[in-house]
Length: 529
Ligand code: GLN
View 1: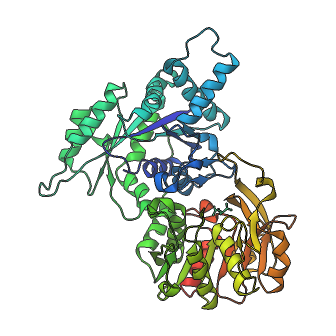
View 2: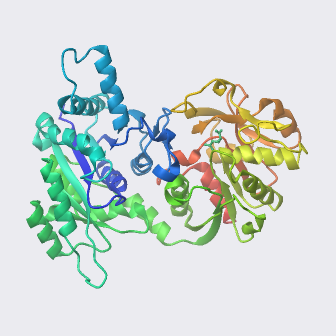
View 3: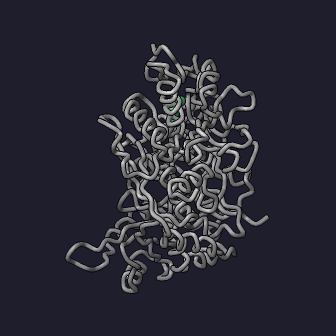
């Protein structure tokens, strides 16, 4: 069997240059003939990002297997069309946990347990094991953070050591840096790249490829300069162009010859076929219709906190040739729902805690009464049920026990299996669960399947004691768990599009296969449904 190949992706100068998108785009370029597994190493001491506020860390991405992982896995899945596994996200918290377990078991008996070799061995062995288990042709290992950060030193050291284990011909080190064009200077500058590559070299890593993030294509001069100072060949200096649409990045990399460089360096052959991808990107650029969608969010770093929702809408833009403008609505101090006046549709996304919930309920009421297309996601379903219970079933004061433990009508209540759970890490109802679809519903038309699987992340559910009163008054449960206890999808059939789900369908949407629920929502909002 040919040896597994490795591409190690590091970043320098600045955080937020788009290492995840670069890694995912490289994966996309090489995926035609290779089985690719993406790995992300994060230096923080949390075991996973599940307990972090999205405000700090961006969206928590959930996988089929229930793993709560870094949001870069969203990019990997969306660009590669694969399903990732939680063990592919390696945090320093998880590594230390493994080292400590080994120490307690006596695996290191008599030894002093040290960062090198013990911690670095655990990192490397974890990675090699994944390569073997997955029979992967290529592992793309992204190191979070920026070279020089204390947090990622051990990961970098492990990456340095890897070339000895796997052979220099089987590993490529790729460094993403920043090439600024300072205001008034009008010239691409290479110094930050030189300094960042020096930091990497001090750690024994000599990059083979440098991607320079820049607002324009890198000039011949700067490529030569970086090549000279950083000791890479000029064709291995590649532009990481600023783009409005992240799906253009594989196209930029193809144009820059990145696939050929990687083929040459790793002795692989997997020529990219971007025909369909380019067509979709072209569609996004040339919309035939335009809509404005309201999203009722509460996290201020909106772009990161709701990344998958934004991307799901982008996928619909490409497939339906519809430009979608987003209008963020902070519902904490919402005076009235007139903010919906010029909206073509409204999304109420997932969330935790009571802040802003009454405002969201008011928005949902307005969407229902005025027949504005509505899509509720997780908390969005729960609040749609609360609204319906209060205003249609006349259960005054109905609420979720998450927000009002003493509500007279607990239409949303904690899942029975969640009642005695005290620990917070990884204990929600997480991952892929099946829903059985009711014939003749919107859900059945959109998914074209009797049984569907979407990902979940919640502790509360529609209280089974209220199923009857809700359905008797016209709410349709269009998808439930097989035993009928858990309500997975609801809809109001007489409206244009009033659909909500207990799941997070945004987590499975990809450029090549948009989420049916978002697709139906955008169709309805643009009047095409
Ligand atoms: N807070 C709600 C629950 O735990 C909704 C969660 C969510 O929207 N992801 O059930």
